[in-house]
Length: 336
Image (cartoon, rainbow, N blue to C red; front, side, top):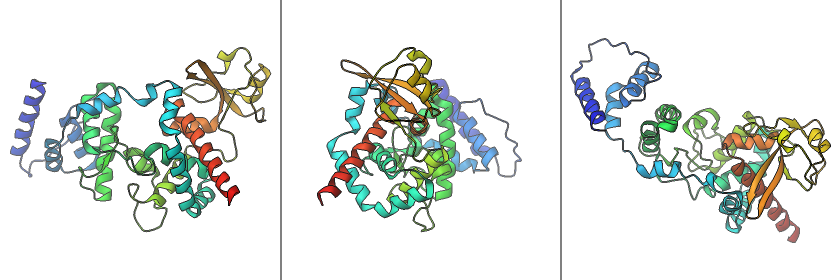
């Protein structure tokens, strides 16, 4: 650690001594994980100002709490504990209110992107409790910490830091102002910088994209994310198996993507409460309960949810929460 600090200090002194008249040709630093290499990559690849970046990194702060959090994620819990974090009465009530408030916007999102309102509402509810829990970590420091002090995924987070700096420039943000999760996710839908730049949309047409304070933009952006990742309108997500068959190992998913078909699974003796087309791609995923396991048949749309967060626990929580909010909203209309 002392050698690293000494090296960084020496580089900064050398940079100060370089005059603007000196021509510079930056080499490729794709495999280098140092701050200096990252800065030079941003200069050579994106023509960003070196002096600005050096000064920015002088203010960067490593946060050990971020490393502690990413090494003990909620997704490490068993299903029966994980579900209770999100599928709760207060959140279901808030989801129903959010849906009622933005009903017109959600209908437009359904028509535009062919993604159900229930899924859009669920994502925003699970991610941030409809904006109440967006995270308090400066995004720059979160990505800096994970990019340079968490080797297990350093390359990924350096890539997100690159995208964040470009995003901050495009949005004219102060780099230390946006706050988000410990992993650098931002706004009502918790978009990481790559997703923000790729999928965020100006859904209210005011000429700017704001996922922090504008639920309309957040609704459109979440729907667009699911459209791009190939949500299949009208197709199933998942069902709990009511009867177990044989050869379940043949129906395991690969990175949560179904590898078999509904027909093949049914032929092996498995059953579920709703008829599905035999040719639909499907797989089986198990979820740990206190007294055993629940077994679910999952389809392509389940896999699409895991593209938002690569966890089957997350995907099932989103789906179950969407169904709870949908049912609660239907019940409220029944009583009117």
